[in-house]
Amino acid sequence: METDTQKKYFFIRTFGCQMNVHDTEQMAALLREAGWKETASEGKAGLILINTCSIREKAAQKVYSLLGRLQEVKRNKPGLILGVAGCLAQQLGGQLVRKIPAVDLVFGTHQAHRLPEFIRTVEGGGRVIETVFTDSVRSLHRITLPPAGTISAFVTIMQGCNNYCAFCVVPYLRGREESRPFRDILEEIRQLAGRGVREVVLLGQNVNSYGRNLAEGADFADLLREIAGVEGIERIRFTTSHPKDLSDKLIRAFREIGPLCEHIHLPVQSGSDRVLSRMNRGYTREDYLGKVARLRDACPEVAISSDMIVGFPGETEADFEDTLALMEEVRFDSLFSFKYSEREGTAALLLDGKLDDRIKGRRLRILQELQDRYTMEKNQRDVGRTLEVLVEGTSRNSGADLMGRTRTNRIVNFPGDGVWIGRTVPVTIREAFLHSLRGEAVLPGLQSPALPASPEAA
Ligand code: 5AD
Ligand code: SF4
Image (cartoon, rainbow, N blue to C red; front, side, top):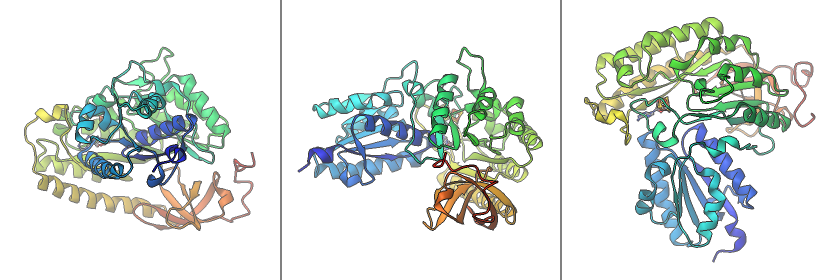
């Protein structure tokens, strides 16, 4: 038997990118305003929401297996509300309910702001399937503040994508590109700074095309400059940027804007001109390498991470070798790499030269082994250096350690005091691993001149 108190707890499971993580934060804020409480225990929840991702096949499979399990849970708990949000919901709509009949609520990427209303409908015995695209994404006009104590916060600056890369479903699932008004972004960031947030991560599918639909005439570099002036914001990061839209003005920003961290995620996808053209990426290998050179010229310390796809239709061994050669030339600080997977509605479905999964698997392994070597080499270079680490919280591996990031986005674990959370601490790096660094704070307790006041004390 379910009680009313049980029913007021919600649990959200998120799949996919940082954009989805932030959408979840926004949905959680809406639910809290509507009187719901968040729980970390799925079993306690009267409302379970799955914020889905369908960008790659693997992501979609994970969602299906979770929904299958929850369908079983609901058999023994009939009052449980089961909702599906995000890209898979956008893509499948009513089909999802036919596949998993236990689902009460399906809503797409432009409809999330209506969540409380949808839940009332379900509570009244109805079922909701809402996947209409709107002209203006409502969540872009809403200020969402993260829980107290957050040091690094996401801020959406634009939604959607107009690029139509041949492999990608995003333009079909997130809609046309839309920039959030300049003033709304700054207002949100001022409020974040006032609550102790020290770092903002600006989010968008292609942040460097920010401003195109706005009357103000401001571009992404202008936005960065304004944000840098907000008192209390020590660090600015952003993701993701498209190489074709990386302007010289933005490259200069890495040298000129102090709080802008020395890290850029610049997905290249392939090192072969032939593949890049078939992918409809809008740049060549030389263009990409030229931008990397200019970035490093403007800011020698800049860390560059990227995304790479292996096994795109028609990719030959020679194309793959070009990808490895590009990796050798650039030496990415880190790389997310994927086997190409077919996505419904995308242009690549019509291309010939589909590759066998074994070939894709072999190429992925070779690529990842190579990248692991480069990542380790890059991480090793920090050993012995003293780097500024913004402390975000306690370490996931050991509660006794603190966890923070360097300006180049490397995770650093080190022993320290909880009062340092939210501060920038100089840490000497002692050991490098594949996914993190380990170090020691310099002169703990004696660093007051170097440390800004903690947010709690402010
Ligand atoms: N197959 C494999 N990888 C893909 N990505 C996007 N679509 C696909 C696909 N169909 C990867 C790209 C993108 C990242 C977010 O996901 O590398 O940059
Ligand atoms: Fe997808 Fe290309 Fe848009 Fe990125 S730029 S979201 S890969 S279509």
